[in-house]
Length: 451
Image (tube, rainbow, N blue to C red; front, top):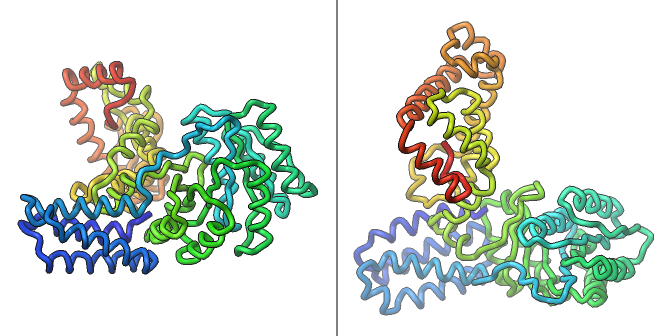
């Protein structure tokens, strides 16, 4: 998400950093670039105007004129205003009310409310250690009720049964009673959606809200909906006293204009962002970190969290011990490292979180991810002995491996050459460096990084 906007603004930011002084002409030229970048990213015109005006006022102040590094000061102004535009500080749910804490999800059909309900339940269970009860009041779509029941079992949440013959208000009240009796920490209510906002939908959402006394009323919106998302946001904002926004399908929207616009239209913070179809693909929305990524500053904190959460520490320590003991790095080890890279979302997910100046000249991430998949296919085409003893792989074996993996002999040769270089690197690390790495595993309880 924000790729298109981020690329444009990151280029503008890089041009500013080296400026010895910032003049009115510099400011006007830069803001013109910012304005065009935001409009091309589908940000609503009134939002663009307010943002550009706010930056202009601060940039023309004395702080920039008297600074030794005016370009950097201007970048920091852009960053601060982008953080404000994205909602300022907001750390998810506070969960300070008397349990059960009731979360109401509202939005149009197709926005992803049902899957978001399950993703949110999983986040609460794993990150906040909460007992969660899920319920669907979408009686017009029996499939939605069944879908949520199955997703609840998948994420480890409880599900309150409902039928398409039941009244939505009665379902909501019964679920609240069940949450109280079952000593649940959180009740998540998935409401019905329509293809467009209408009076009946809004009345039902208001009635359910009143029946359960929701602590959080979250508007779930498809990040790819563009300007249509704004109309829905206005309708739901008028009908419900929204407390926040959840953006879904953010991984499929390269522009990001909806995110910036919906927050401004509703006046409510974005609290979560869906970044994939899997049940673990929901992230708390941190305006400061997202603003940094948009401006090409990267999100190293998110990168560290991703590595800590996805890297298999046991496997990484096993590999380190193997190299320390003098055993050779083999194709089983390489395959394990490549698969861990895939678990972290591939090269694209990692490069996306690095500052722009560090990724300059890096290979196109889509091509890099394709290469990783190709290398795994080549290794899978090898026999057990070939993986353990790569020296056995002669010309005829290379042709067989290429044919079995659907690749060219040149691809196999390239992988073998890279593998040989990795073996040499591992051999050179044997001793002190690896011993220190093993000490880091034991001392910090996690891997210092991929081999």
